[in-house]
Image 1 (tube, rainbow, N blue to C red):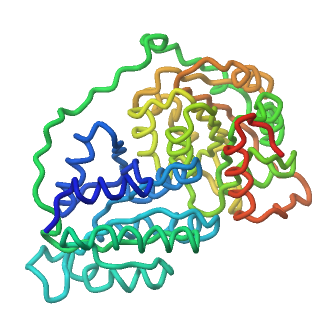
Image 2 (tube, rainbow, N blue to C red; image 1 turned 180 degrees about the vertical axis):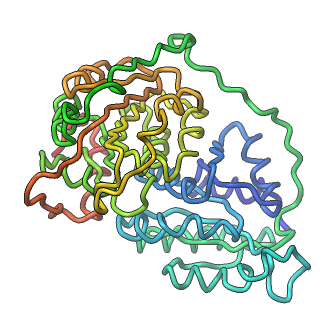
Length: 393
């Protein structure tokens, strides 16, 4: 059994300062210690996939991150691990508990199957792993092995934690009730113009994306959700400050949160879709709680899964801007034209913001797929962020 402090101190020397995840009793001491530690950050995610995406955004921004989860939640993380981290070659350090360990201590019946297949799942996903250290002398070698693998391959590494690996740590810190910035203490009214705009008169997604590109500065990082949004953004103009998310549907905003945390000096613009947002709606709550001052969350809502054939979402029967407000976004607006979206993005006042625009259906003829690979896209973003001038090379 080790002390959480011993692991975290050693991990910090290797560059790990952000911890994110979903609680499990096995990692309770770990999470409690990180929450209490003044030199570490813990971001609690609503599901394990979001946690992986948050850590991925932080890594992209130059900050190493640890993702903690119960093995029963590993399934929630399969999408980003296989279609985000593996494709973009962005590594994160995973700590996955081994509930239901075969031959191990008695556990609840829901852990039996996952306990038997946890390491097999990691092998299948090409995620290298080792058992979490249980003695102080094992900590440094374990972290060194993980970092070496992550650096060499650009892929995640997992430490599989058995029961009673970490000594208890009682949480001393009380939950922090987040308050909006003083400038946004009084929530702004949510306009309703876009809700009444006739579908045929709504701007196209291409018009909206061109408006985003007109408003974005070279030092901004623009993250486009998977599907036609990323492809059309690329077709409008491929820029080094644009990240085209592939796979990992619904993870764009969590990637943006991690990146905004790692690089508070850069504005992050997340271009989300209604289908993607609905898939991981809990991410809104996490973003609103963390209140990154440098993130603008843009929803392009065409009320459809257009990238997969135009099937309807349920956004036509709900108010996603209202959901954002309820989660804690103080600055929420609806716009009904591409020009209004451009104007909103030219406003660079600090504070987490949510901007919603209804768009009409339609895809440009012969829409190209990006010729730049995801790995190259990630490399360009890293290079841009390393350039203090903020200008693409």
